[in-house]
Length: 431
Ligand SMILES: Cc1cc2nc3c(=O)[nH]c(=O)nc-3n(C[C@H](O)[C@H](O)[C@H](O)COP(=O)(O)OP(=O)(O)OC[C@H]3O[C@@H](n4cnc5c(N)ncnc54)[C@H](O)[C@@H]3O)c2cc1C
Image 1 (spheres, protein in one colour):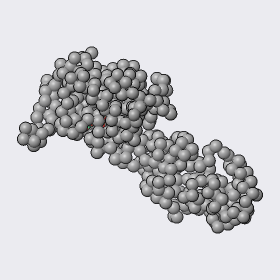
Image 2 (cartoon, rainbow, N blue to C red; image 1 turned 60 degrees about the horizontal axis):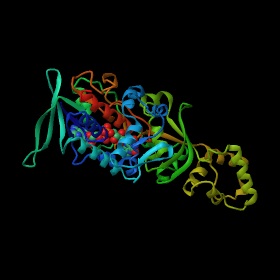
Image 3 (cartoon, rainbow, N blue to C red; image 1 turned 180 degrees about the horizontal axis):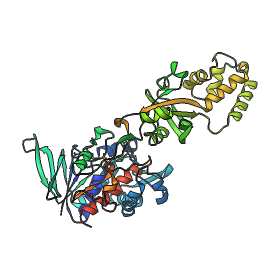
Image 4 (tube, protein in one colour; image 1 turned 120 degrees about the vertical axis):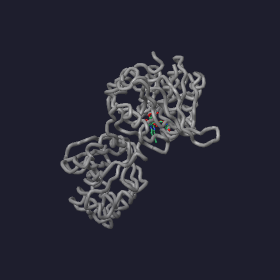
């Protein structure tokens, strides 16, 4: 049995290993000059390789088609992935939120483990080999048309024969790593439907709500990171998501863990037909979520009594980062150069109101260049969940982000790649 795996990312490497382990002859095609280019930058270079939570919780982190993954996850779970890394020489550690990382904090150690496994299993690797087209004969896959350097070093098209082909070309996010969506084209040519795609786990373009937007833009606060804040995203008064944690202001709007997670739930709401009908998506930022408006007002009164002569903007530096003070004062329409003791009851209430509910309008998602994952992809309705085999073309299999599967941050997206990659390899090798 000869198998070609297209794409040497997380899913493709796992698929190649899993197939070779079953005794198949496996060739792994990677268009870059090295394997796992995206893996190097995962988890900010530390690679959050999976999540160690229990199975039930695991599936609550999947946004699209969680049921489809049940079978593949049972065959190769988060625990299996942890054992795989350790067995191939990479010690792991578990951090906050059950996130699993290499003990060394180096993503390169996960790639090393995968490369060790590929070498042990005897997988042939072709670097700089770009799959251009699937070859089909008598209604079944017969190989791949590949562009790679010939003997003279010049790119040449060649036909590589195979009994089975696994597509693991990734999605559209961070295209500089090689994931440029080629797999969708291969899938469509093989008769598959591909669901609409959009960037997910992605920063958001945003502006302050009027009247603040006339004076301030998120750019004013660029680089400011806020910890222990809560956000609520809402459209037409209906809450889309709320969360607590860390966010960041950027030159275009907002980013950081809270925002990336929220972005996964906003794609549809931000579509033009929805904003026209239901109004804009608004971000309510609460800078002091642990305290109520009343508790904060009482604190303000206490501080004004103790240090009434203090100028308001100076006093507020104990409440929030300096850069935010003019924004909060602007939103509450309170002058900065007054004494704390001169702040009226109405001004105080407006001020605390701004601390508890600073409003921004989310205008759009940022692009694929900044998206951690792609939402949408090859429809899972046309894929066998146990083997990842195509129901449309004999001998064809899919694995990883090219499929219509995505999850929240925390190691879940890579686990999708490990589980589907393993299942595809085993499936293609013939079980
Ligand atoms: C910045 C960033 C950080 C991330 N951090 C994490 C994290 O810490 N934890 C987590 O779980 N997830 C993380 N993710 C998501 C995770 O990296 C992806 O979900 C995962 O890499 C998908 O694996 P894949 O193998 O399907 O695709 P990819 O990793 O994108 O691999 C696809 C491979 O196929 C190759 N290829 C494409 N087309 C062809 C072709 N025609 N011929 C030959 N080769 C081809 C590409 O060059 C590429 O190497 C992160 C993503 C990004 C962008």
